[in-house]
Image 1 (tube, rainbow, N blue to C red):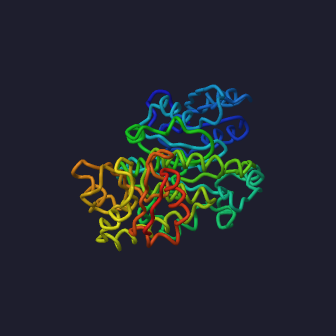
Image 2 (cartoon, rainbow, N blue to C red; image 1 turned 135 degrees about the vertical axis):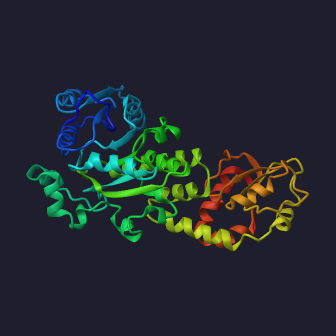
Image 3 (cartoon, helix red, strand yellow; image 1 turned 90 degrees about the vertical axis):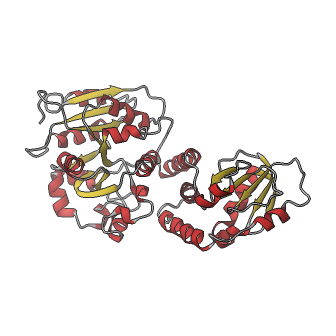
Length: 407
């Protein structure tokens, strides 16, 4: 219970769409926060519901400090809904909670303390019941019979009841900063960040549509800005999975990952996009680490001679892209687009201003369809060929009319 006499210290933002019963459950559990919970407000941001979600939200106005925002239904615009909720929020800490996720009695307090007592970070909380790969469909019935804390005590060791990220968390001892891509599991079921840090990176991508990806991008941006991503099991919720059309969700995820790599073109994004496009997700960290090892291995491999050889006989006026350029380019190379997975080397390659450079592996580049005449794939890609050959060739043929390969 919060008092209107003081400003809130935490704003809990809940996006919703036609889930009145689940919204009721989330709001009800927020009324059950333990005594001593810091002052908090709840912002329900409605993405165009046609049921009586608005009435459900407003029915809690006497028990929660509550704000309600409505936007027209123009398709799944959950990113915009979250941002609009954050714009209404007035606290220094933003907590994002999915509709239907029911928080434990220390939920608000744990998120608050992480930002009050610890160094600046983006915080993830645990999500019991969120395991779409092996769903526990009994969760709604369990929550009808037990309080959330009772449910955790009774079922907290049942594999299907555990957070989908449990295996990954166990591998890193809950220390996500031990991973190369900690933001891979930055999911908005249950997360928090200081308000100023959220807006410093621009919040969620408001052009995003559909399921998944927008939270990965936010985590990526927060981490790139210097914030560590931390995990707190005590800031937990229980999620009741919705029966959705999984294939449609995955197709939306693929489209959104293409948007992600287009907005943030670099090797780690290319790998993530390629994996999701192949209906994979969890190998992302391992694949990225393989690339980092390869990058170190071929740091001193120069390919200027083979670039020169590849371009013999090509039109002197044709446009050229070199994938795997390294730092040394042949003097004879006319102004070209050069790409390499080693950021330092590609920066050196374009230092004189003659060429345009991109930090890219070559799975999905920033170049437009058919934008160059000749694409050269150098032997710097050879160690990646067994894994990525089909993707590298497909991308080379997408952007260029003539592909010449030394890999």
